Amino acid sequence: MRKNKLQISIVIPVLNEAHGIAETINYLTSNSSPTNINEILIVDGGSADHTVSIAEKSGAKVIHSTKGRAKQLNYGAKNAKGSILYFLHADTLPPKDFDQSIIDAVGNGYQTGCFQMKFDSNSHFLNFFAWFTRVNHQLCRGGDQSLFITKQLFNSSGGFNEDYVVYEDNEFIGRLYKNTFFKILPRHVKTSARRYEERGMIKLQYHFGMMHLKNYLGAGPDQLYDYYKRKISV
Image (cartoon, rainbow, N blue to C red; front, top):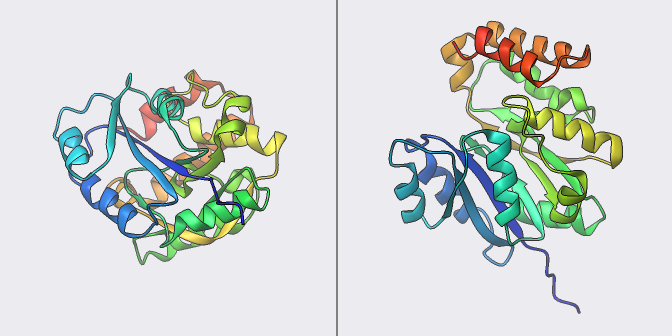
């Protein structure tokens, strides 16, 4: 039997994530097989705290990039050694044995996809929106659900559009939906609800919905970033 040569590079863009990066790295190591994971690649955008030293002590490889999620993600992909790229937010934890789920999907011919999502919250409001992540439509996608993609497809698709300071995940996934089948894996990542709890759940979800609408109506990266700065990042 031919040995499975598929291996995953986990790519995590960070900026001042000292408070939780060790927990994330340790979780990834404990809930995956070292034969499937080539590396955990932390792409730092210029952290002013102890993110870098903590990540290195936790066993991850750290590389340094220009600040900006799209730029950090592309730089991580460029330096990744695995044949599969797995883009993950620092505050999102995939299910146990996520690596095997991804490798099985790629082995079955699915070049890209994501998990469904749950929040680390009992909020009925947030759980209602998380339910829709099982629906295979690009409007139900987002970076919090994580993203796996073969390096070959990533390169041929052009990667993330660095003109997008925000909404880079959605823009990239939208292009993938147009050019290939996007697989939704029947398991869940768990992501932090901290931002919703701090900003107001209904208010924040409304503004995210408005960004989807503005994108649908043709807003470009500068317009989306302007709305984000005025309504979300304040």
